[in-house]
Image 1 (cartoon, helix red, strand yellow):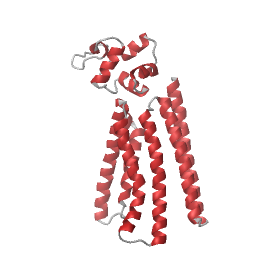
Image 2: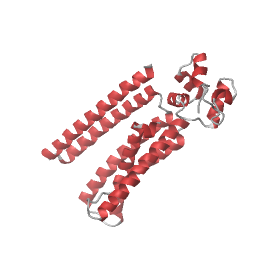
Image 3: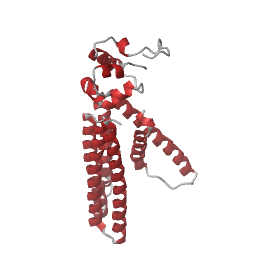
Image 4: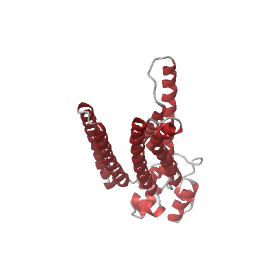
Length: 198
Length: 71
């Protein structure tokens, strides 16, 4: 096994350990929030925990990408944009919830508050578009397009099947803001399997 | 598409990373091309051939002319 492959294996182990640690800590924090009724303090604590874990995960992901030779400057910029978009999303979401609870707005103002959480998500979509246009490594771009198509296929399939199930009152209503997370899950799955890697 | 990248690289004692840096691509790109998982675009294929000072057909085997004989 060459050095790059060894480093890649170590990086993968660290990534998996981080994901498991994040899941355990966030589950415990969410349980504590509900059990002890921590309110806004708990929500802010959760946001800080998520931020810390996300930054650590991004760094570990970048280290692994460097070790396996799949890191590119465009990917680095994408990661930073995604982190910023995550921050915008958290601020937008909590801001909208707070504004909705306290100001009881209606009309255009209510639409503005409801739109706030979308800003972060739309920033993520913009970051994905920028990555596609800025990635100069044709093989990495090819893989990205392939993974994105898999993510899109996942979203279209699930949305169609779930939509008809819903139409026949077989499943509960699914909010449409799930579109981006479902797409991202499909994209991530493709990246981790042969569909995205080749 | 079969190619002689691994042989040409070995003749110069270059690692995949060395070649990737010379070409301005990722190491994974070199690996994918070398193992035949990915066919490079024409501009990149020309860059590879020029780096080794060879004609493009001396690096890459034409799929239409390729026989079972190793290149």
